[in-house]
Image (cartoon, rainbow, N blue to C red; front, side, top):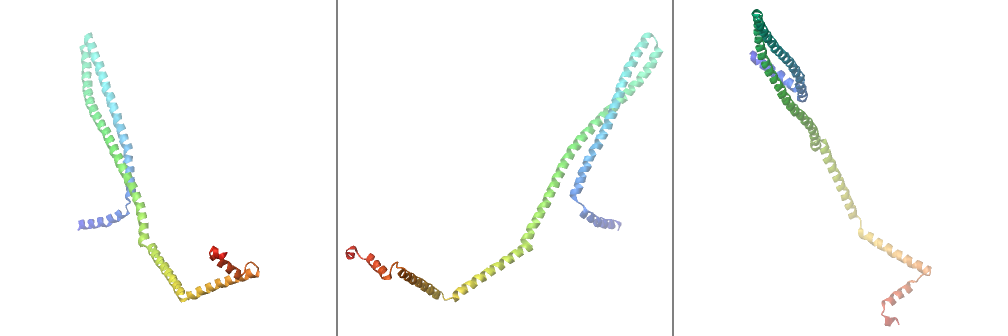
Length: 241
């Protein structure tokens, strides 16, 4: 029952926490955490290098003491002082033992330091690769949010109120245009177009009569003279003579 209760609690709060998580922000924090490891790695390498330098100095001091004690032993033997030479011999043996231990520790320290440097190189290479991939994922995510906003705009335009209003108003305009054209056709059909044409023709004849009258009054040319001229122009040349 306890396991079932824990599972229920995990499913309840796990889903709530997951809904609150922002992958982009968490990924940026992860990048910062990875970069923060580099100063720690460098600090550890500095300590290891410092210890390595101390052991190297101890080893070099041991070699120098070994050389000095060897010289003193030889000098004591040449002087015939075997007791002093024996004391130097004991000290030389201690220095040699210490030198061997220091050498072993120095070799192990060098190996550890080389592995640490290699680890730093591998970590930095892997970190740079992950950071580049994370930054690209963040850029893609930001671009996807912009694309989603654009898509939502197009979707609302296609199936939303804008599209329906557009279709509705266009249909109403087409109906009003058709009704206006129909009214015009009906108005034209109800008017006697023949009577209108006759009135126009009568107006033209009346206008011509008025012009002829004005010409006679002004002495420009009479109707009979104009008619005779028209007949003369229409006869052959022999008949005109």
